[in-house]
Image (cartoon, rainbow, N blue to C red; front, side, top):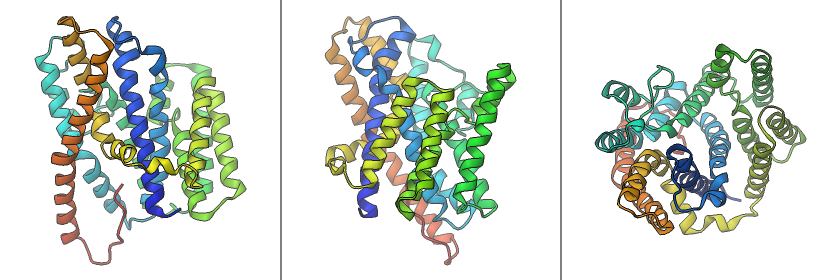
Length: 344
């Protein structure tokens, strides 16, 4: 499969994952948080939360690919910032504004923590989140930092000792937490992303397979990651991890070409702003609709459609224009011997 084709299919997977998370939040998660039935779709969309796992596997693939194509830590950091911050800053401002004007006090935070959220380091700085879904950004940022460390020490190509050491370190953290289960061990487990390291490693292994071909050592590490998931997460979690591994295997072997359809690629294209804006703003709208007596399941479908349209507008008029402007400035000012990196 060509590189363009593969990335198109992976983009589609990202879009499907985002839709799964949106549907989960608008149904079962809303009902859990507010004690109100919303549409009666809970059983159907209960597993949408596992879309986050697929996000992390995709990040393992794409970000590892990225660090092999950039020439320095600063190059990597700048390109990640260009990719993440335009839509994110807009989403923070939009979400904070709408939630502040709404009547759901449990979603509101003060202005100073909201300003800290603009850095994307709110979890590291102990500030509450403008939107609960931003917890995954802390996991992603930690992964980026780990990848930047590999770049700094110029060991990014030594993938086997890297992933085995990381997985082993995660095992130690999980065992220590299981043995003591204190606030400190919980914090270490969370901020070391030990509960998600297996996902990123799976993605990295699939990139290695795509780059170097089928080799037993890569599949052995994937198997270890599945065992790790079974040992420290849950059977249900492991089943989804295994399913995502199977899907990724089919993708890199050109067996899921239907994922390249325009509609699925569209959802992949808008997946980032869709993820950023959907939860708290969606809760505010659902709550208001319920107050007005609009509780029919069709309104949930309409809300999903409206959120998709909003995400597309953010992508078209905020994310892409700002990214393109920043990339032009960066390319104009960087050194001519810089390696060309693929935008992810």
